[in-house]
Amino acid sequence: MNAFVTRFAPSPTGLLHLGHAYSAWAAHDAARSAGGKLILRIEDIDRTRCKPEFEQAIFEDLAWLGLAWETPVRRQSDHFEDYTEALEKLRDKGVVYRCFKTRKEIADEIARAPHLSPDGPEGPQYVGAMLAAHEERSLLAEGAPFAWRLDTSRAIRIAEKTAGPLTFTEEGAGPKGEHGTIAATPEIFGDPVIARKDLGTSYHLASVYDDAHQGVTHIIRGEDLFPATHLH
Image (cartoon, rainbow, N blue to C red; front, side, top):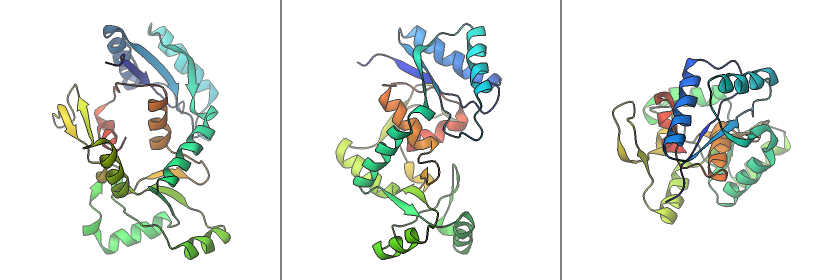
């Protein structure tokens, strides 16, 4: 069995609040009880909102709480090339596509057929489609902005063909009392954005990549992030 590895991965967009502190403490205690490791990761891909002074405050607050973590600390802003390579691999597998629609266009499309877009964890589920090659070339030549979306249904088919049914194990209790082996239902997200053109990545892509890269075996998160487990 793999060694117990968990992480605390705050974004330095402000000072830690009590919920952050509790999450960090829970992760630290779980790692210590299991004889495992706690990784601290700084999720600072949003360079417009993340500030060095908030990052420094995170270190100081965690030290004041008496918590210890593995070093060196991984900063996502130092690893954009990793996320670009991960996106390229997803492109090679044919599970992502460029979406050129604006938020308003998507909202209008959903409003015309709301029954096709039930609410998901991030709002109405939007399922798009890859454009024909000539349409995409034309829009790219015009410099039209786009985002990379995950073709969730195709990704599920490929993943299940490779690894079998997608499941995760909840050792605590989810928001509805979920416990034990749970069948993952990533389709509740529709086709989520996993990389913006200006950023090259997203929380979903960068966090999942880093968890795999750093050998994370257990993720301790609040109930508000429970649905993300289905996608990740």
